[in-house]
Image (cartoon, rainbow, N blue to C red; front, side, top):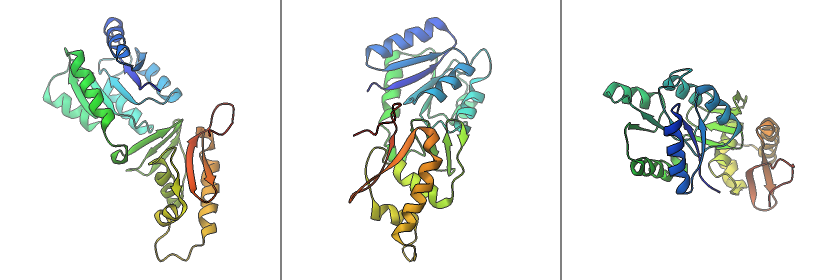
Length: 230
């Protein structure tokens, strides 16, 4: 599947030039000319990264960045802006961006920056997204679309263990140890009860927790037709 990029840029000529260049190297680019459209697209699709201009017609890009992070969008965000002052770069990074590139720029440098962001180990990321489910590991928050999901501490521990390996089987014993202290008297059934409750809470986000007999559990996206992926 092609890497999906959300490009937030109000200059149509520049936006199409960037999208065309990135498209030639295999990226799939969705262009948003305003902050409002960018939030709409972010809620509707799972993007791998975002390129964000700060000078948007309907609001400042820094405010959009802050809203994206508050809403649980964890994809890497690269700011692309003509604002080249040091305090602008620091402000952007402090607001939650992962990189900052000043205009004018070479498309080869933009591509290199994107590759660097996409190469970052998933395990080190404090955010993870699957379908409409987004997890903030540092802040201990989970979101279904833009709505926060109320989870207990143990439910979040289960979710984090599974979301750090989306689509992969997590051994039942390892999952148990990540949720309960080593000296806990909890039974194996207690884990299954927590998973059952968690499964219901994340259902609206289009994901499910699948039990694989003798192996463990796997969190996975539920296809639109409701059939389980093999």
